Image (cartoon, rainbow, N blue to C red; front, side, top):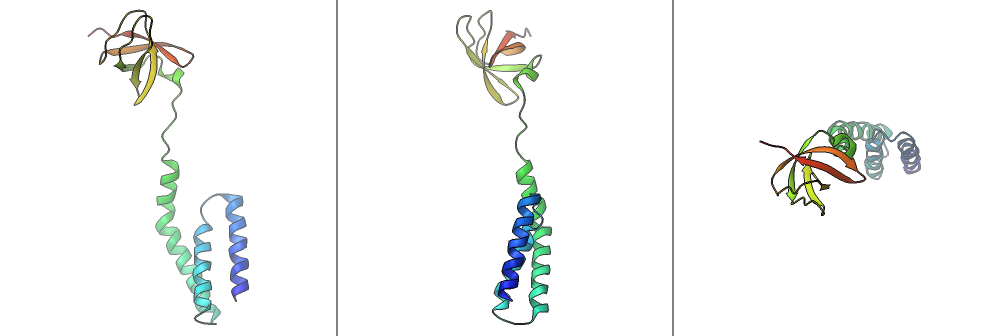
Length: 139
């Protein structure tokens, strides 16, 4: 029975690699547990039961958790989509020197035609390369 379970593990591994859906990986775990059980009993039905039950339990318990970890990547926002948004100056923006502005939780280099002090609110007018062009928002 050991060789049958090893073949099942190999087939499920190939299937998981082909689909990348995190479905058969849980049954690979079940097949490993079935191999351990095969050393304790020769009864195929017990081994198969361990395979199905443990794989299903692992799938039900872990699939949503693992997928939420994979999908929890922060959304990448294009610097161009920041035009028109407001931000907060985190490093003074001087007329001839770059400063820094925090927009959507990201700190980005910024420049302006006038000096803008730290903690001021600014509006993003345009983008020049990887630098925001900003102006102070009058309150």
